[in-house]
Image (spheres, rainbow, N blue to C red):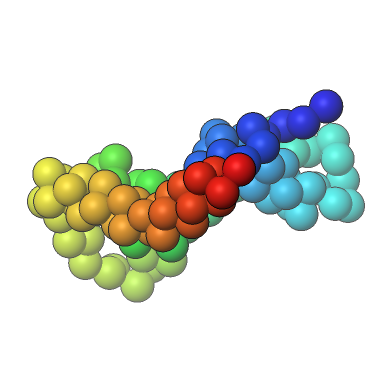
Length: 114
């Protein structure tokens, strides 16, 4: 059983996110496995607000155009700068292309040698 397509430069991103979710849930519920559903919103918030190295934004910033309101942001009364969504989308797509271009070039060189 192979989960990822072999020799493919862009493995299944959804599969990776599911692995991240499973890891986060295991870490959260390592002592009591019966209460994972009770606090799943905390896990969701942490994954949605996590910085993505490829896009240079968090999923929440890309989707909502701002950082999510967290309890810490509310306590510290942090400003919630609203961002220009089309500019964020353009920048995120450009960052994804920039990140994958070297991998695609490397992959293409390997496949030509075969």
